[in-house]
Image 1 (tube, rainbow, N blue to C red):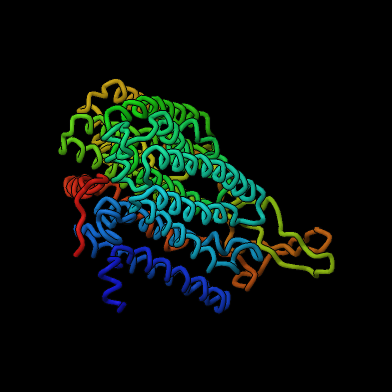
Image 2: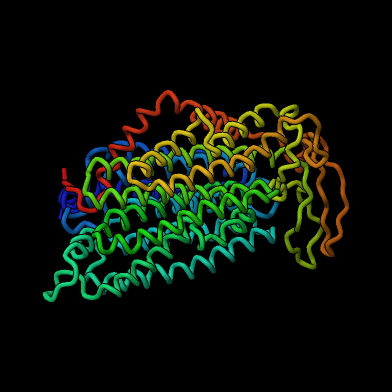
Length: 576
């Protein structure tokens, strides 16, 4: 078989984005193995961003083509507009994470600055897993994609290897993630037994037929219900839905801040891509839908309420944003429920609008959340902090110089922001914009995201759920406005000082004793704690996008509507 015949037979362009990004990840990892430290710092971020850009170009070339990997009837992977929309979100999150990671990777000598290639490669391979999930048309492909993105995130969560909190975050995420994976696999197994397939269109068709004696429908309805429940648990863990959210605050707080931003956007979006394909699309038969609908309704109310109420008492900005992300998952479930309710009537327009509201909200969430975490990285790199730990040293080792400043030790508290506007007005203004957007204040992108999703839920007669959502939005305004008030209040926090241009370094002996000695300005051992231009550019662009949505909101919503109809598992798909 020639290459041309192979491409035509399996429709290889449908997996071009995943292939390009995987190859780029391998190139970055190999370059990190052969380049020196200085060359790695210069070249690897550029290589990673170039791979991300090439992948984005390939995604743009697939728009409206609705390709499948193999024959449309049996394809386990699709490149429809629904999947492509999510891939844009994943690539945006990847690009921002690469841009804001430079300072973290150079923070502590001997800890992480020698493994830049592995860091960027793990980010890119995790994104490949996310893209697999968004295009999955089979439950086994959903599982493979989730495992691909999760394994990389387990490592990334513990990438600040000398920090106990980072190690704890990685271990908690791994153990609970492995437990959730078991639920997901059992759910897939039970669903396969009940319907005779793991292919989503076949499951949809068999569920619609109901229990039959000829083997063409459902073999056992109770087994199917059990499988659906376990699928919800497995996917609910990745989406941080209550009561499967317990890992989120500790993992978000302990992970490196760029990694926290990446998982808060990418992993959550991938989970909702799977939820949208499996529940309102595939399991839309009235009898089955009525079972999961009421459960998801309760989960949505609990997720919104618990996320917002617990966030009220948080002093750490990262933990506050962690509970905020839980609450936003509850808002997204409103769109899932609206799509499920619309499928009862079979109104194609209503189903499309409900899907579009979820897509629009996820795009808004990605913009404002990545922007908020980028500002946190900015603030952490301009705050003096004492390291919590040092790397273990061999007994016969001589003196070693290590940097005393590590941005990851700067777990910023709300009260530390007092007077920030007078010291760093651009950072204060940007963080204010992102917090207003997260709260849903007009005319930010967060307001339009909430408006669309609340409107679709109201149109589907989910009035009580909309009232709960509005009430939770009012509650969330309190903890979002707390940092804003602190930033613009007069005064100064003693704990939030900009470091001197000359950062002290420490000579650490084998017995653990340390003798401080200031490093001369410009010396090789001096640590640069200033703001990275990449972080500043990222923050400014995200802030402009958050506010600029008022101009392009109709265009953005039309784009989401173009992606929404093709998300149904039974959509007609064609080969070129």
